[in-house]
Image (cartoon, rainbow, N blue to C red):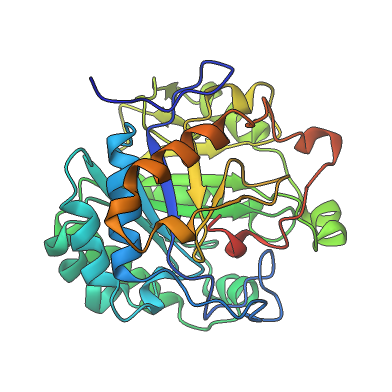
Length: 327
């Protein structure tokens, strides 16, 4: 019988978010407004270390792996990493989140390597606002990447937009018009408070509840999630090809359905995006002979997972920014 990762609150963990770099080439105002600043001397996980890690997680019941960053496509071996993760027995779904910089050229190659789902960050459908948010004047390039992804054959293409009051909150009508005929799951993500963005958060945070109320009033219906789905509340409408997802970490019982663990690009296991320093796994990743010890360390660490991230109380822990451990 396969082992399962279950915490003290009976939550089952079948989803791993694996960061392969914390570098990013964008300067998003909500994450890295001053650009990427390397804060450690450690090298990122090697291809072999990644393979040993994913095999251990698969034997502990993990079904889905999302490869993240920073921007994961900055790794020259990104396509090879996708293929390696997709080949592991027990892994049913391999996904990634990208800023879309490489997407126009690489979408099909990643799909052919085994990537089954992709999330693309598009924080505005207005080119000027996109430039303002990301620091990159490449809106049309990213949109061509979205179209390339739709043509490549992915089971699901998602577009992420971080909600910011007075910046992109008026884009809803544009987004809805876009997904009327496109099979895209558009996801609005509430801005989250981290260790370094208090003033920004207080100025721009906007709850997704207002969008949820509007969707329900306009005939959208909420879908039931699968066991290894992410935390989004997903809505569908009979007149739309696309879907809407809302990620609202400040909503009641958000952590009740938590099903994911994170490993940073330098090999630390994080039980939550916020609030703890993580457990080092790297000394057990270099040799496949350490697999059982690795699995035991992961299982033992899960005993310390808390019931909530406590963001509602203003506790953000030591996470400096979302790119630091893969968002």
